[in-house]
Length: 176
Image (cartoon, rainbow, N blue to C red; front, side, top):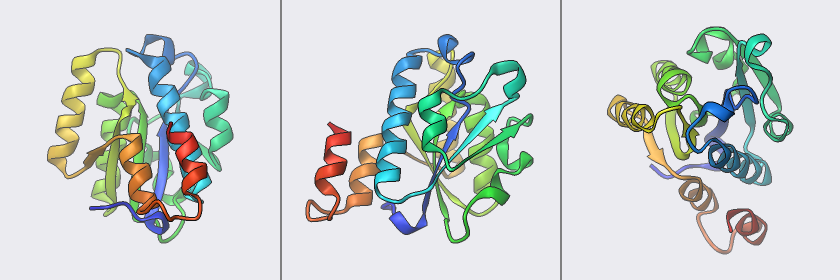
């Protein structure tokens, strides 16, 4: 299903400074999540963050925090168990999910959102785990559970729909 701007919300999960050095290709994961967040903000799609036990793992990277209208601190791996679902703006029915770790908090949060009736898209190039196999298996499980899998560029171009979108040139700069 193509992504609609008015239905979408971006959820950036646990891109925390103390966690990221352990993530395989962590700098790329954060970079792609920032791109996704900037594109979303440029198209008026809300962005919410989560932080797993921030006292122990630190806060999200500063660039991530700046993109988020709010950040939900949590202890459950499924952020919907710690208030994420209630924090979602009304009328947003498709969660575009990115972050870490793919096989723990991304997986459990995405499944939590699916169980609460939202459509979920997992952004494969903006999720990470310490081990590649964990990320790959998590994405496969999420796809089987009903989540769509996409990349940052797929989501961006689906939001734009056309090169005649009034913000096309601005967003294209973020995509390149």
